[in-house]
Structures are given as structure tokens and as C-alpha cells.
Length: 229
Image 1 (cartoon, rainbow, N blue to C red):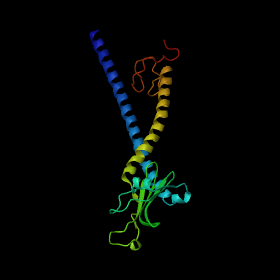
Image 2 (cartoon, helix red, strand yellow; image 1 turned 90 degrees about the vertical axis):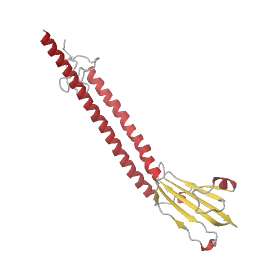
Image 3 (tube, rainbow, N blue to C red; image 1 turned 180 degrees about the vertical axis):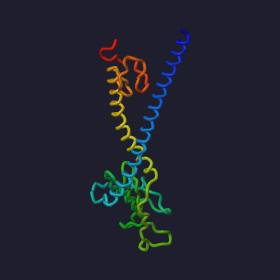
């Protein structure tokens, strides 16, 4: 009897160890799949974000209308949209045009109605601007306004937006996919358990504590299969 009892105890321990190992492997596999899906979504969102910004940069947002002008003391209090190349007067007017995927800020300092200093910032992308183009009309102390040519930086990537856009958009998309999937999988496991089947693989447990197919522990509240005693 003692030998049989000892053998039964070892078998039970081996069964429990096998079940725990199977569950742990399944959890690691699920976590790996979730991480891979998140990385894939982040990469795709990053690529789509840059392509979308490039497409938006082909159209001048000001052609769509809807701009707002800020003038006088309000413009001076807001200041230039970016740091000027050198010290200069405060802006007298700010023309701001915003669309879904672009924003243009045209700031000017005027003298007798003529712009002496100007900075124009164009930004493209959503939800944060990925591309930015800055144009300066900024005379030095020894140059006349008429002799100054505009300086343009050209379209440049915005590092912070390259990081934030995938995290915000990709993270929301991942959660939007994960939550319904988790609900469906949880419902499937519950239906299997209530039907006397293994919640992990769907195999009949025959009322046992461990699934004979995959070795996963059977839920304590699962029903025995129809006709089982």
C-alpha cells in the first residue's frame, strides 16, 4: 500500500508539474504574440504617420481658408512661433491657419505696413506634427530689409512626434483590438468549461482535474460531460 501510495503521489505531482509547465508555456506564447503585435502596429503607424504628413505637405492649408489673425498687443504677447535667428522686434500680426493635418503660423513685424521681419512655420502630421518647415525673413543689423532673401530650412522630421504618434495612435489601436479579443477568448473559455471541456484546448476532460490532451488544470466549476457519473 505504501508503495502504491507513494507512486500515486509522485504521479499526481508529475501531473501537476506538467500542467503548470503547459500553462506557463501558453502564457509565454500569448505574451510574446501580444508584444509582437504591438511592435508591428507601432511600426505600421510610424510609417503611415510620415506618409500622411508628406501627403498633407503638398497642399497649402491657407488655400482652404479658416485662418485666424492675431494683431497688436495679443500678437506681441504670444511672440514668435520659433526662436528668431537674432534679436529683433516683437511680431505685430500672427496669421494662424489650422486644418486636420496641418498648421501654418505666419508671424510678421511691420513698419509702415511693410513686413521687416517675418517667420513662417508650416507643420504637417496628426495627431502631432511629424514634418516642419521654417522660413525666415530676418535682416541682420547691417543689412537693409530689401536686400534680405528669405531663408528656408526645408521639411524636417520632428523627433518628438516620431515617438509620440506611434505610442498614442498605435497604443489605442492595440487596445481597441486587445479588449474585444480578450472578451471573446474569455467567453470561449467559459463556454468550454461549462460544457465539461478543457478551457485551453477544448478537449473533453471527462470530469477529471487535468485535461488528458494538453495537461492544463480543469476549472473547478466545470461541468462533467453529459452522461458522466
